[in-house]
Length: 381
Image 1: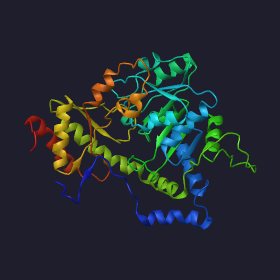
Image 2: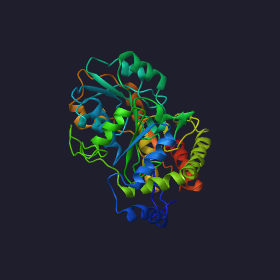
Image 3: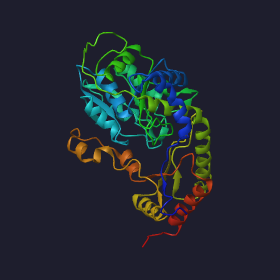
Image 4: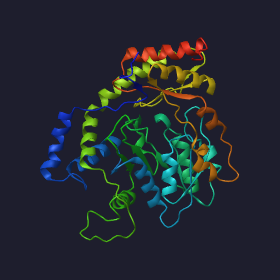
């Protein structure tokens, strides 16, 4: 197993060679433009729009800014409540708060980890401005149910699709909802060092977002007039260059991840007490995560400790729930809703390492450590 100099983390970024990165950056160098909607930024926007099948793609410096900007422009002058899930990374809720809105937490579907439509709909009030389901681990929320909720209550659905780049259900999942926000962080299956994007078919939203991320200034106009306060949320040329190279490698990188996913599913399928979370149902998946569900939190901690002794760093993802974090616990809605499915899954799920450079031998050893630990009741030193 890995030694101190070869730790295995839950994820590892795919990195093209420095030679390839230097070569593609020559375009920006020759143009003397390394930010402010340069040539590589423009090219990446076009290619991502084509890939997702959405008319508009707005690039950001990160996905948190992208989600915040989407909610801020959507609720400008009339902020209120945004219904979302507690079973997510805290950036989802933080984006709601920084947009000037209040997060309201509904329960999840334990089969997918995604926001439960019925639980969300039960919390809709006249103050509700949007619903933000999360494509948890890339699993799809119930798109049809949320479309019906949107139509019935006249409330936009904004998908936090940070895990879902490259996933298709016949068509790209980026095509669902009023907008989908994707993360291009280094830990994601597709990265631009740091980055994010909003995919939408709404021209007005696209125009507002491009203005918002440029201090409120419309870069297509000669005027420097600001009609509402924006921020600096632009993606730079180096990040765009990385994104273009990632697109070239994406199919091969995903295929390698798929092989690790297949090993885990095959080997764990014969072990009681270990459930491979959410069978893949998409027509195309990105294999960004591999979560397993154990019988209880005690078993999970036992496995986590044993793996760490072998320099393998799995992750309790998502734990704790956002509603259990100090800031949100103090500011939770009263009376707080029951979140039994979220609490159940948060106590049991463990994400195992999966990335394109992970060898099949180490993946099989990880399976063996997990299985032996649970079968033999390993308690550690």
